[in-house]
Image (cartoon, rainbow, N blue to C red; front, side, top):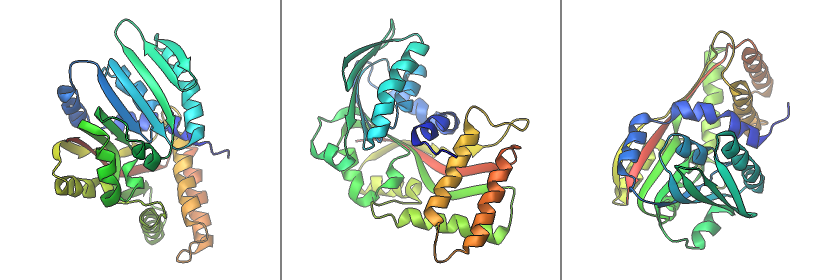
Length: 292
């Protein structure tokens, strides 16, 4: 199978749509300033969140900075966002290679794409904005070190979404002991990344925000729950499941504590469950809205 990270980001859009905590989302809506706002999204991928915020009516008039370290994502976003805007009846004015205006009668967003490593981006000291968005990103960092840098980007609100919180579940059970070992070892690889990571970032974020004196306005679960309807997964979610198994394979290949023959059999069995729509996948995560 051809594993394309931009396609994975597109495939998980419907998964994230279901997962995002609606109570936290409504609290965000109630606390956003009723004027043109400035937004920074870190680790923004190919633009799903901007599309979601516009479609759901969370923002309408904004200056939006889209930061991502992967040039592949930035290039994809520069094509996908105009296509999405045109498909939804909005107009796009390309002002430069990295700047666009997305607008219609009810919205006007100036979008700037920033292909830059997070630490370099923070080091450039962009002016603090009204809203910081970090979606499925903070569990990739060492929280205690990175969180003050993250929060320095906003002067008001921080919407921190889909932060993994220590539980992955595949059903039906193949072998309870093997299932448990594979999931546990995978979580440990998240904590051992050279670049940082936290397999319980969701709960740890609440503590770290308190240590920093930041006020948590709302918090709630944002679990990924992927299952088939009448034997078929919605949208491109079968590909999403294939990519999740790919993450496991990449992380645990040649792991010294795992029988590789048993692991290969487990992967084959899990992949075989996708085509008939038998595989169910759940990941526990947490959304947090904070005010600086």
